[in-house]
Length: 398
Image (cartoon, rainbow, N blue to C red; front, side, top):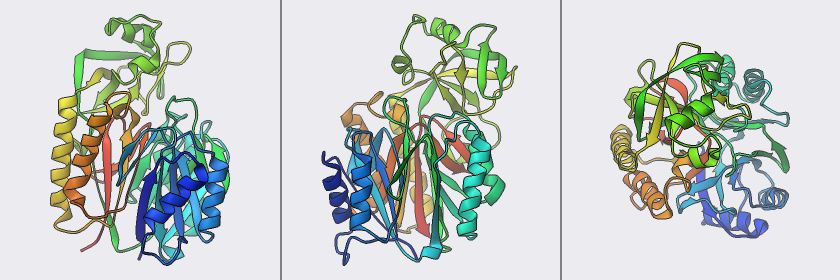
């Protein structure tokens, strides 16, 4: 059976930072060696030094990870440039596998993810839970999910977050001592005693009337109500067309009504399908195909509803745990709910409300990222959400 250990820090020196994380995570263990080491780092670290020192300290570990705009550990949230979080895993090598491709995911998200999943399945055909961190430079996350499902089927849960940096410029993935850009990492767990309890909360208001998509190509919005998408939305928000996307992406976003029954594990009738981050021509990409004739909605975050949603979600998760103590918690939080939207005190309060109901002072391993979207199974369907706090609690089956 797999065992999990976590820690986070923001020590400036990269070698010292990974050392402290391993020492904190593996306190009481005979040494710093483990079988799998998952590393999530903000952009300020020297990745070569980070990975080289990790390999030296834990030579038997398969090392894998990615960048994020911030880290959420059991120590709390951290969006500093030197934020670092790890999850060390010990257990039989037949109970996990990892796969990374050094090529870019952007040109063919479906084919790339299917190939990545096939490599993972060849290494371990008994995978029953997938942790996935794809690049944030591709918007076609539906195709990524479908590519993985083409190999593992829809019944295998996919959890994780979209890898980004704080300025939406690029992202990096780690495998061994190598660093890749605009790629993806996939980790599969095959511990038959583990199940995952997942849930998400968003907390936003719908603004105004629905918007008609008048021209699009798959997930590329070319016209809204017959007009240039960016200019139309800026007019709707009463902002100049020259407004910086970084000033808008945390204020407003695009949403659609939810199809099917995922509302059971999610607290809204609407799902965010894209932030307001335009292409040079003013067109926009969404995380789902939006055909012409579809209706979109402008959505805006509501701090009161954010806190209410977190409290309701954790009450539900506690009920679903049925008294069982979590083995580990993975967590993906949208960077839009981080420093660009909420100040430090509020972020710490949200994290406390996420962690205390299920940890209650116990040292539960916890690793989360602030990223560009959240991969989560909702009501039996693998989904990609934006602007949520998504929690994945791993627990022993009854």
